[in-house]
Length: 338
Ligand code: 13P
Image (cartoon, protein in one colour):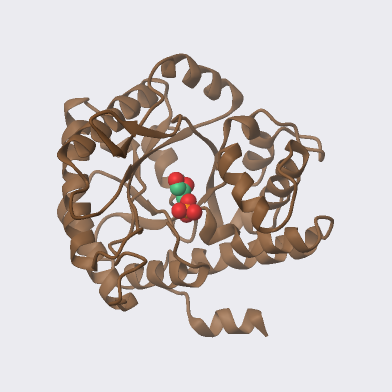
């Protein structure tokens, strides 16, 4: 398959990406919230239960894994990447080494992980990965993001993406403008514009073939502490407008992060975007919390009750699959709750 074909498969209409690449530190926070011990066995159990769900075949085009997970063998027989491929989804891997304090602007971060990346990519390819993820993080405040943070993170994203394509995998390019803060939706629009512009500028300099990439952006949305809550219609209109103006049309797929929105909000907003999507982009989800929160709660209640964990995950995957076609509705959510 060409990189363009892989990107389109990951974002195919009705499907999206499951972000299950929480680092050991991040999954520790998730497990703490449900009183589950953060040990390898529990991490494997939870994740293999999701990856073996019925929803995988119909609604999941790709799964982003963490280094530990891509090397694991399931208790069901196959390795984790084999299990994912068996269900028709593409296995992928997070390759960045996290956001670290940026020298000179230490309240901001720069994502690290370029050293030795070429060698790690070769290993991941051999383990079955066909796409990768790298997340850059931008904070909004009266001073931030600084030009320094936008430039250094965009440069790193582009060097990462070029190496990934050299290794014959699809890079997910993730410039995340955080929801933290009290800024309004228009500030988010402006910062997202600046960040996307610099990102595509650097990708061009580094000769990245955009047809073989997937963009993972934030939605254009007010900060979580902002008093003016925007409607889903406004979020959709401003998000689509921002993407159409700042993302080159060669990019085949755009898969949003959920970024702290609730499960329902992230389905509803994605649905509104797809209802008015008149661009050439396949627009879908690449959710972590937006797909896993309910399943995680079930896992906390009873780790052995695979049926309930899978039921919760199947439902969220189906709802987001519908949102990727603009066919989701609140009635469908209520039917499930009943
Ligand atoms: P959330 O959907 O929970 O924001 O996670 C997506 C992700 O992979 C962030 O890098």
